[in-house]
Image (cartoon, rainbow, N blue to C red; front, side):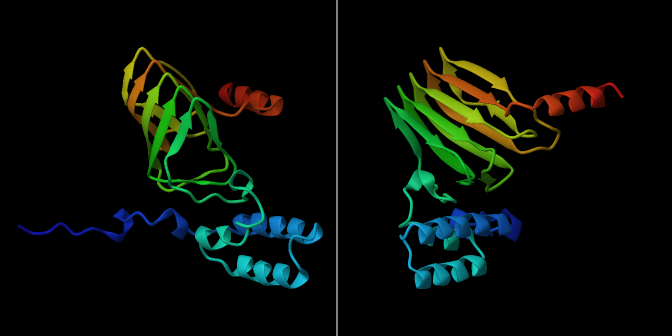
Length: 203
């Protein structure tokens, strides 16, 4: 039997190896500038780290430059593929963070909130492998992203108010949900955006 050839496009790179954008570099440089201004970095340290930031090719290279300057939740870029867990409390991820192809999610009588408006999706189809018991999952997704619930639900509720587009990215919520709830919504539109959308539909 012939062994199937695995094409390079099928390989999923580690989240740390994803390419950084100019905007990602500027986020880090801004944090370094604040650290220089309040004395957490010397002029020499700031100069060295800034040079590394502008030369960085991957997100992983950027995260190391600010790790000792801010707590995890305040980092300009979060590269973390560990499970997201909430035990009788709340766990939130937001800002510029990388969503791996498969993200384990656990909400045990707690709330997990994922804000994807500035997130980097490792692929266009992301799976949230969830175990929700008496807990809640709250998603904020950009326009164009579709959210599907495919997991087993027992006495659970769902409310999906997104604005997907054809062939847009998909967030799939799998796993098991017992006595839980899922809510996904797109960001609120400004009055100008709402008027523009209505005018577009009327043409």
